[in-house]
Every structure is written in structure tokens, then in C-alpha cells.
Length: 178
Image 1 (cartoon, rainbow, N blue to C red):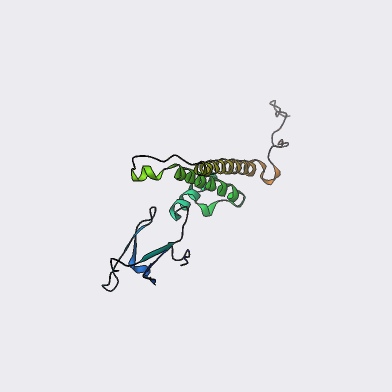
Image 2: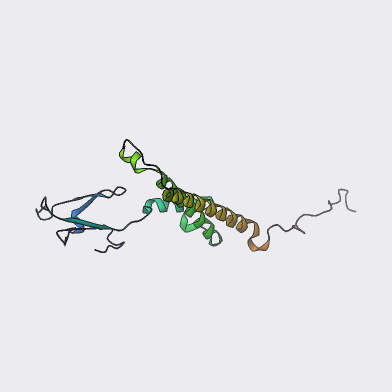
């Protein structure tokens, strides 16, 4: 049973693949789905149901939101209008937001979601993942800030250099010329 990103969820009933039009996804986060009867035939109550899915860490709407927020951090209105020199900085900002979101997801316990009485303790594996995503977010945000600063201060090799010849050092004579 292989799945691909073209078909994120595939279902087999008694080793026969169920048509994609007969699969109704109820909750994307929890992975809940319903099988609708195609042609009036519903699966039997004792049928063997297998499912395969393609996992994606972020929804497309989340990624679009992260790119929009990152574009606004580099003074652009949309991700497609980010200037060429600022695209890497914007990607770092978007990556930092994505890692922050993943850290929050790993922090949320499933026991809180399903309202169990006893919440399990976080294992060292989960704590390591949370720490990793937080550290990646901090590093990517710092890189984005540095790239944005370098673009504005050092573009065209003008930044941090004294500007000679722009201002006159001596005021014009205020007396009338004869």
C-alpha cells in the first residue's frame, strides 16, 4: 500500500481500493474519515479496512500564512513581490514561524486533547524535539534579521561608509556678491 502526495488518503476495503470520491475526510488533524456508499453498496460490518496516508507537517494555508507574514517583515505585500536580495531573509523568517508552530504542536499533549484523567509525562524524546524546533526557530529568525540588515545597510557596497560630497562643509557666504 503506497500513497503519494497526489492522493493523500487511500482506503482499502477487503483488499479492494475504495474510490477517492467515496472518502469524506471529517477531521484532517485527527485523521478521521467516513466512507460513503458508492452505488448503494456500503462495506460490510465485518470488512477489513486498511488506510494509508501521506503526512504533511503543515497545511498549505499555514505555509501561505507564514510566507505572507515573512514578506511583511521585509516590507513586501506578498511573497511573490519580495525583492530578489531579500528572498532568503523572508524564507528564514517563514521557517522560524514554522518551527515555532511545530514546537507548540509537540508541546500539546494528546491527553489534553482527548481529556484523559492522567496526563503522561513528556519523555526525553518529545522534550528533545521541542528544544530542537525552538532552537531552529531562534537560529532562523536571527539569520533572517542579519540578512535583512545586510541587504539594507550593505546593498550596492554603500553601507557604513561616510558620505563625502553630499553635504557642503562650508556655508555659502551670506553677504551680497558684487
